[in-house]
Image 1 (cartoon, one colour):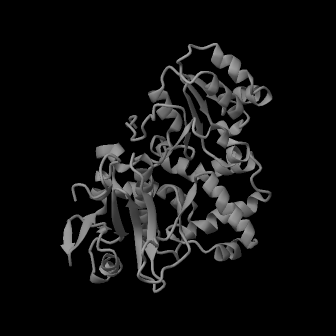
Image 2 (spheres, helix red, strand yellow; image 1 turned 120 degrees about the horizontal axis):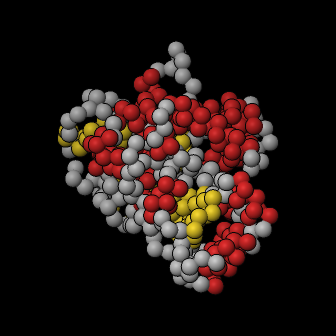
Length: 386
């Protein structure tokens, strides 16, 4: 596929760029900083050099033109380099460092705060529909996700099928994050059933036949590897009793499907529905990350089970989105979002569905999901043009 322009922007100073493997961090840095000095810690020879002598980075950087940017790929491989980076930034503020990584775990353990105030934090995400333009197809995105590594492959399904194994081998096993790799592999399969659901750690622990605290550690590993995230409950000025547990999402709809077992007893619509909701989640997550304004992603659920899938709240606005994997909107599909609007009349409420027509039912705007995703752009508010 052709290289797409990404919504990720250069902040104009040194920064960390975190994101799961395959989200295009290296491609973006090569296009954005074509003349930079590059240190690729995935290269075994480079890794060995800097692991044994991290101070050599200072010698190499000082030998380059003063205003040349420095890109260090997968900085978490040798976190000791952060001390040298800190020294070089203090020595000459005109030097810019771009530090990419697919895991924040080791950095947190070894002093990432050394660069607090000297390096910003940015995150890379799978493609947004608006980045792909006319090549975006909702049905394909629900089936394969939008991971650049997958979409660029000659055989996307094969790459997607091996993606989890890649992480098990190169991240979890290599970094010694778990003692029992088999139990973690079972956990990945079990937690896929929690995608787009309220996370019940005890249930996942029973499925994996391990202790609850072990599963809590595994979930933390997924979050550290940026493979999954939790969406908290929206509780501001709640008029009804609300749930307290967060929902869980794997970071890409295609990765979710590659982990989720399926067979004759599984309803395709159930898996498609979770994948569609996850696709919307990853778009809203990317939108909040790429925006210059501050906004947070939540969901709403009362203890009586009235659930609105996504709530976006921030200084610029207040939006609620319900996602339905259906081509026809039924009255019962509007029940939860209608109740949410009654509690929060300030919110702009939208139902997203798989149909083709934009509708207004009982003053609730119902928008085709593909149309909404195509129009979601970090430079605009989420309901701009609706």
